[in-house]
Image 1 (cartoon, protein in one colour):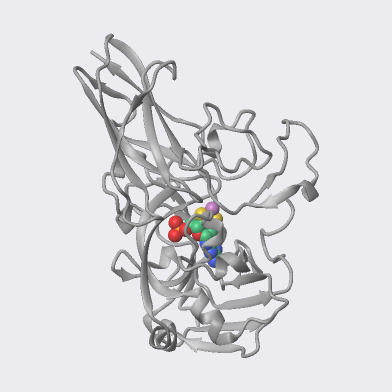
Image 2 (cartoon, rainbow, N blue to C red; image 1 turned 60 degrees about the vertical axis):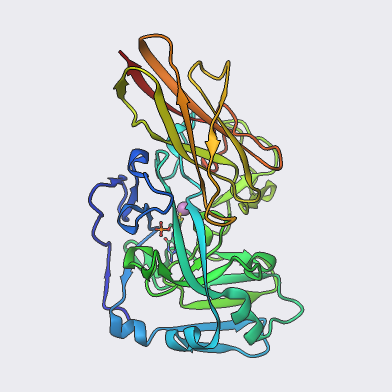
Amino acid sequence: MLRQDTLGTPKPGLTSLADPALNQETPPHLLTTPITPTELFFVRNNGTLPEVSPQAAADWTLEVTGCVRRPLSLRLDELRGRFPTVEVTAVLECAGNGRSAFEPPVPGLAWGPGAVGCARWTGVRLADVLAEAGVTAEAVYVAHESPDHAIGAPGQPALSRGLPLAKALAPETLLAFGMNGAPLDPLHGFPLRVVAPGYPGSAWQKWLSRIVVRDREHDGAKMTGLDYRMPRRPIRPGEAPDPSLFDVITDMPVKSLITEPAPGFCTSGPVMVGGFAWSGASEVERVEVSADGGATWQRATLEPGEGPWAWHRFKALMLLPAAGEVELLARATDAAGNAQPMQPVWNPRGYLNNAVHRIRGRMV
Ligand SMILES: Nc1nc2c(c(=O)[nH]1)N[C@H]1C(S)=C(S)[C@@H](COP(=O)(O)O)O[C@H]1N2
Ligand SMILES: [Mo]
């Protein structure tokens, strides 16, 4: 089925992380457009890269099994032919985005702020496929399987995650074969991936080959223990974590990213501060910027997003009085009243760092 089983070729211009698997983030100042071009889109692989030839893609089958009345085995052309095609513009953010800012440091990939992008995803609704399979009454969770494996361990899946049934049935959740008007790129899951808008990247299973509908939460690779889970109550560094007090991450928190000016800017006169803001569960309501450490805030203008799951561009023209070093801050607030915290909220695996984004530069 697979032509090759490799680590993949890094994209030029992105920042590669120190890891045996291919992991690259986007320097935020390269994110200049509301739709992130595929060649600039961050890459997160937990293991190998299944490179699927066009022939292998034509033979690719998606199996749907488990708690269903009619197990399915669908080739891609059948999937496309049998269900309506839909397009959703959505932010994809890794749950570990910004992990390198946690203090004290936590294990895991040391992402800066750039493990996020926003693309147009084309596919069929997972709900339509599940309706065809006939989900039974005991179903509560869908599990996703792919052929990528842990590096150096061919028998061991790299990642097998899933979705609570309600999110699997939500109209925004897709089985996608297209990204930004083209077939999915091999690095982004060609020929088929899950698109779960508002949920962490880990829920967006790439190279999807099998869906198992379950009567309980999934327990596949990186579903259990502390993986992609947050403590229900705040936990202090050094405290022994009890996994039974952790929940699987679902909706991503409200967040903003300054994309202009670039860090290390050196300028005079008014400064245009801009970027993007998004929230997994709610609408972004406002973005504010500050140049005095958050003592005072200036409201930025917010553009409408391309649909409810896209990010919003924000812009603010700031008059910065003094010459010298300056730090610019951005803080987004969503319609539910959640605002970004000033400092990351520490947790043992370093997930969901949605602290205000800060960049430093110099006025001359
Ligand atoms: N099969 C498979 N799917 C996967 C992963 C993986 O390692 N294997 N990584 C997940 C994680 S943690 C993230 S953040 C997103 C990243 O998607 P991207 O590489 O298209 O940006 O893919 C998800 N889907
Ligand atoms: Mo991720």
